[in-house]
Structure formats: C-alpha cells, structure tokens
Image (cartoon, rainbow, N blue to C red; front, side, top):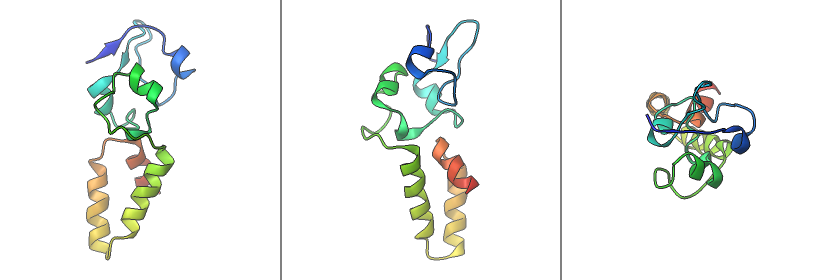
Length: 108
C-alpha cells in the first residue's frame, strides 16, 4: 500500500471521504491504492493540489471535472440508451466502476 507520512489536515481540512488514514501513523492511502478504493476514489474530480499530494499524477486523465459533472455525464449516457435492456447493461457496468460518482449515480 502506498502511503505518505504527515498531517493531511493542512491539505484537506478535517477528515472527509477524500482520504483514509491511520490515526496512529498519520499515513494515508495514495496513488493506485487510493484509485482502487471506491469509497475514496473521486476519479477526475481530484483537484490539481490533491493529485500532487496523493501521488496521482499520471494515473488520471489531465482534465479535472467535479463529481457533479461526472454524475451529469453518466446520467446523460444512461438516458441516451435506446431501451431497458441497454440501460440495465449500462447500470450493471456501473457496479464495476471504482469512482464515487458511480455510486452516487447508482443511488439516483
């Protein structure tokens, strides 16, 4: 597991869904390990500052977009499906997705 030592409070403020850390060592998940955790992965919604701090440079596309934008694009794709079978297949594929926007979209 990739980790970094130090306080994440100065970067993110109080603890939120954006990071997971061990209170004893103050190490937190970063890099590929963070991207494999659906509860922490924001996909392209990680800011430039977060990408640098969490060792995500080169692991994500260069464009940053908000989780709301990701959800909107996903819903647009879902609504564009021509029939119930295509929508069902799309939703099943979303279950394999490892970003937070996928779980948000599935709850809608």
